[in-house]
Length: 529
Image (cartoon, rainbow, N blue to C red):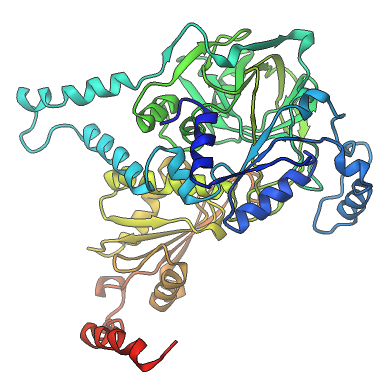
């Protein structure tokens, strides 16, 4: 695995997966346009060595961008008083001196490399092993011998638990209080109608005010001024849960936003882990060794010792929320301005030669799709532990994580498709899935054309489509209320007589394997293209 971000960058460069951009590139729109083009074309990670805030303004392009953004109807039209400066932050020499890296996870191969494996199947095997351990001893029951056989694995788990060390590179430079100025960071503005620059690839660490359990999640943070950001933790995420508890207790919630470190930590913070599972422990499982932490300087939290940058501060539930957004989101549409808590920065610590990692989200596939795809693959064993009839599942990029889920099941009894869908809606972030399409085990759910072909052939809409109220993603702009809407399940399996289908079910058309083999061997000989 990698000790820090720069070891990962060295590995990417050695494999031809990183390109250094040595010419000046603006943090306002230009970097994101490069990254968008790179990820859409299957291109490499990009290391911008010379950020140049204000370059597009000096070229006279900013006025064109502003006029285009305000013309609509694609972009929202902010009111004059809410409209940010263009670019929102004044250029700062320190920001121009800090390299920016983007598209780190912008392919399945790079995401696998970030997890230290050849492919995602190898990472899935690690999770499957943990699931088997969680299931406990086998048929021999609770015998002393079977319990003792687990001890080596338990010792291995203890060895990957996060541990605190005295110091680390993340504290090489420290700015506190009045010395803090977020303008020294090369924070990008990604899309023309974004409300300003957003920190988009920081994992935010908080602790449960009641239990002290740690949570790490990736939440966007709009930079409002030199010492304040928005904190966009959504209703269903761990940070928001900690905030609500702090609000009930009438106390501030401390937080630290961390950039960089081993990329496995960044991935773990994005993963839909079950409640109560420490993301840094999960990162240790993926890395095969413990994440080293150091005490933060101004808040009672720990941060990864080998991170690039740590932004310490607090959220005060007693304060009124701030206006956050619009923001070009992973749905491919702008999420509109909403009230969210303000994050007050008390310190910024960093490496002396820090590298600023960031990302752009938008119409998929984007970098966040590959992070989500990794979670899809890694958490299949956990889904199958709870619902063993699930053979496989897939969230295609067009479904932007929460809009569409194909599930293949080993169907054994009537109504099983609806039972599986209900079970999935009861599993953490699966509860946000808007449309679930259930198909038979012989359907390749990773081929959406095949999955839709099978499902649409197998349904009688009145009989096989059901609607249910429930929670939806707060970024779902079509729902009738923020975070609440309608969900749909389509039973695209072969129907049993007990499900009201008394006619024979037809067989799928397949070419004879022997004939296929004969034709394959003769194909080139006949000069066919």
